[in-house]
Amino acid sequence: MNWNFLGTDWRLFGILAVVAFATLMVFATGAFLYIRRLRSSEPLPMSEGIGAKRAVLAKVRKREELSPEELQFATQVISDQRSPLAFCIPAAIFSMGCFYVLGSLEQLHGATPSERTFIGVIPMFTSTNIAIQLLRVIKLKRRLPRPAPPNPQLGAGA
Image 1 (tube, rainbow, N blue to C red):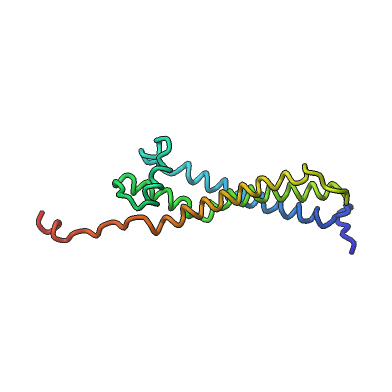
Image 2: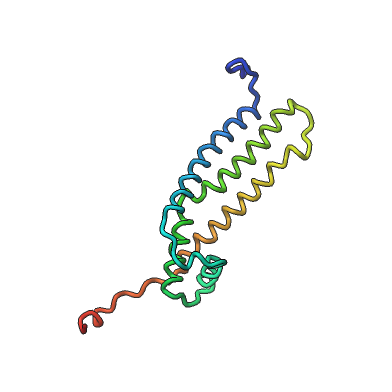
């Protein structure tokens, strides 16, 4: 089969590299939109503290009592990371690694690949770890305490 397209001799790794680059651009755009949305949202006062996110999510994991501010912060963190656009960040990193590996394999023209060719596997593992961490936080939504229903006796007596 002749893959001659626009005067170039396209091979399998070249085509896959172009597909990886196209997906990289799509996911990078999604990551840009997600980060822009996060930056435009109003930060909670608790979010300014160092290690606040880790501490609050640890409390949620252990099902400890949360103050109203901590509950609001935990709800915001979990809802932000439940967004499908949040997964664009690890997907963009994974696509970048694929693009590097496939582009390197295309440049070899059949020669034996060296270790340098597979440096792109490092961002692939990293992006997998990021996606797993996002999934761990998403599962915490079930552990968030439910807000107490309003007591009708308190409103009637006032």
